[in-house]
Each structure stands twice: as structure tokens, then as C-alpha cells.
Length: 265
Ligand code: SAH
Image 1 (tube, rainbow, N blue to C red):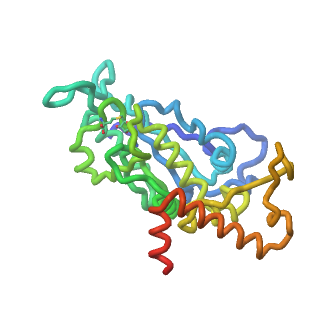
Image 2 (image 1 turned 180 degrees about the vertical axis):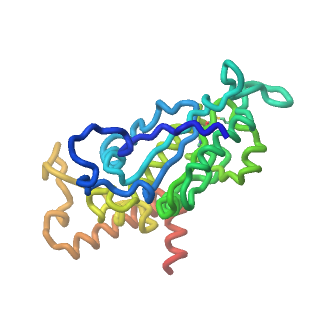
Image 3 (image 1 turned 45 degrees about the vertical axis):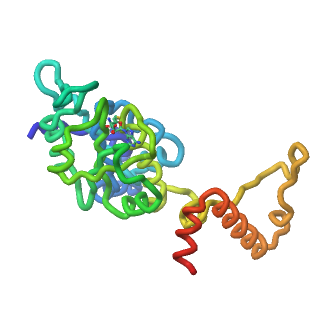
């Protein structure tokens, strides 16, 4: 095995300190940290937007961890080739099975506990909140980002890879899809969202889209905030929000509404 050391982002980065190790009691145990492993030709694209705001702070605080595996490191020959022309002809290039095998084996060797191996792919099952929840309950996830025409099919069969899609459109690579899915998953990890309530009440968490939100000013360009929200009556407010969530879901997402109704009635 080649075993290239993965590049890590976040808490594991060396930060000079005068504090003796044993006094750094705020340092969480890395062994038990939820981990995203990313196999990609573009490791420099990570953490990308995940390094900002709540996910970025959580990464720095060691609430989750990000390891990239540079596919180029596993390439063949002087030029570190990772791709070749499609068997049977046609446009574009395909990522080679033997190159992917080495990268996946390295990532697997560095994995801990239950971590699904996922290929970002427009042919895959559509990513959704339920998938984010199940990944958040696991120890992490290993993601293979495709480029060009994609990967040699035999890799998907051999490793039992789950194909997951961000939506019904074609991206040039899996990296943006990986970041979107990691964002949705990491924000469900304990301690990542400042306010624990916010993940419970938002869209999809209860099978409904979220109610409209308002803030100051109370009147803006002739538009007032719905009176009930300023009433201080919490029961009334909760009832209004529930009604609005149901109305929005019925209007915009009859599919979600039907699924919700079949669960509850
Ligand atoms: N020829 C392929 C598309 C290749 S796009 C096809 O028609 O199915 C190049 C890479 O971008 C893919 O290997 C995949 O990793 C990524 N990608 C493209 N669209 C995606 C989507 N909707 N969701 C997740 N990943 C996607």
C-alpha cells in the first residue's frame, strides 16, 4: 500500500502554544471525532466553504475532522496519470480503477468505525435530510469525487460503493456536491449549531417546510410583520407557525405533504 499521509484540516493542524499538553483540557479526543474522508483530484478545494462560519468553527474546535486524499498521489508513471480514454470509445476520460483502488484502500485503512463509502454521482440516490441524519449518526463518511466522465464501473462494484446525487443536474466534479452534503451532515452533529433548537424546528426535520421568518424593522416599505408574532402569545405563535408550515408545504411540495399525511393520519 502506498499510504500517503492524508492532509487534515481543522483541529489537527499544528498551532504553536506555550501551554503544556496536559493542561489543554479543552482538546477533544481525536479518536472519536466524526470524520469526512475525501478522495479528490482537488484537495485544495477543501475545506472551502466548510471552513467558514459554524462548520468552520466546529472544525477548528475538533467537533469534526476532514481528511483529503489527493488522487494525483496515486497516479501512474512520471506524469501521475489518473485517467484514460473510455473503453468502447467516445468523448472524455475515465478515472482508472487501479488508481482509485489505491486511494480507496488508503482511506479505508485510515477509517474508524462505521463509515459509508460514497461516490458522488448524478446517477445516485438523491441526497436528503434523512441521509444527512443517518451519516451524522455514523462515525463519518468516505467520499469519492469524480471528474471528467466519471469512474471505472468495476470500482463501484468491487467496493460496494453507494452512489449519491446532489440533484438532477450534472456538475463538472464531485467536490461541490461533497461540500454540500458534508455541510448538511456536520450541522446535525452535537454542539455544531449554537442553538440546539434550530435543527429541530427547521425545514424537513418534521416533514414540513419551515414557516416564514421576520425580524426588525417592524414595518418595512409599508409591509408589517404579522401581528401575531408581536403578540407575545407563545401558543398562538406556535399555532400560526404550524399553519404556515402546512400551507407552504401543501402549495410548494405536494410530494412532501402526501408523505407527511400518510405518516400521521
Ligand atoms: N458522465 C457522467 C457525469 C460526469 S460529471 C454522467 O453522465 O453520469 C463528473 C463528476 O461530477 C462525476 O463523476 C461526479 O462525481 C460529479 N457529479 C456530477 N453531477 C453530480 C451530481 N448531480 N451529484 C453528485 N455528483 C455529481
